[in-house]
Amino acid sequence: MIIAPSILTADLSNLAESCQQAIDAGLDRLHLDVMDGNFVPNMTFGPPVIKSLRESLSKDIIFDAHLMISNAEECYMDYVNAGCDHISVHVEAVTHLHRLVTAIRDAGATVGVVLNPSTSIESITEILPDLDLVLIMSVNPGFGGQSFISSVEGKIRRLKSLIDNQVANGGRPVQIQIDGGIKAHNIAMVGEWGVSNCVVGSGLFNDRGTIKENLQILHTALEV
Ligand code: DX5
Ligand code: ZN
Image (tube, rainbow, N blue to C red; front, side):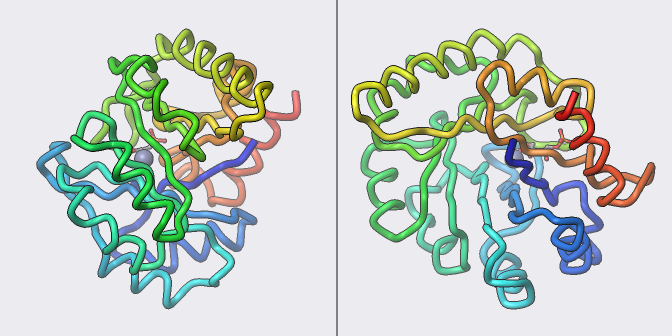
């Protein structure tokens, strides 16, 4: 199970240090929750902050950008140029999705599509062969620390069988990533549904323990 730490809940006043603590704890990527205050009712950071993090952190760290923005079609290159290795865009916020997915891949990043809790996977069946990842939101986007929406189980299981079928027919393997409310009590369960990549924010960045301690709790939950 890949664990992608969402830095939304990190100490944003000391961001590089918080990110370095996640890296020192053994994590190999950062989940960058980009919010524009328009597509979602919250605003976080954009290309300048990401570029600065890229320059201060190890080049080996995967920058996984989750674009919760209304103008991804216009500005995706800013995120590639800032140093993002992966870019996920919301199907609800993009008009010409095939064009954008193709453009992100042509720019050299891997590419994913994000589905909000009420968005069906039927909206991405045509684009699935072109994706590296599908991100299933298990909270409504905009904030960390929200409650897990367990009704996404059916959607994830259906998506997993679509992907298995695609691979069986020689198609591209596609990672299923889940985002929102993932903690020790449910991380193994979503793995059984077919998830192989979990975004974790407040489960890692909290005042109950260090990132290393919190990560160990998640690893222990995955071993049982
Ligand atoms: C919400 C973000 C998530 C969130 C996860 O819009 O996309 O990545 O930060 O935080 P937790 O794990 O606390 O739900
Ligand atoms: Zn996210």
